Image (tube, rainbow, N blue to C red):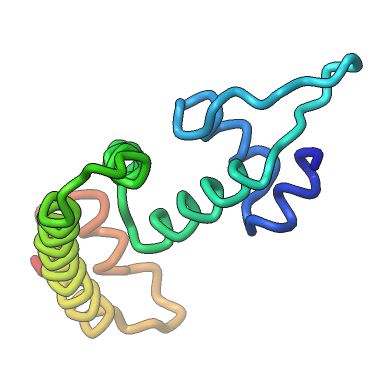
Length: 135
């Protein structure tokens, strides 16, 4: 199948397929005489794997490690679980950070009158002005 078909079937854009290929997550595609990329069913399975792993928030390096484990039929599932659990810890940290950012922004929006006046605590805080409301 060509890159357009692979994109449609994997849910990825052509650009992302080329990017993953350049990054090394996907083997270099076979090329026809006219230089077009051609993908096999195994490439499509790999692309779907990458897509799903990225949807779950795994970094490219983590996806690379997961793919290596997927390719290794002698792998221990404990290694896969360990990687997934480490990712959960990272997600929990990001959630905490996002909740703190949300609380700060909520405080700033509460302090902003949101009317016709030019004074805006949100902009003052972003600019680092001394008179800004501190979140």
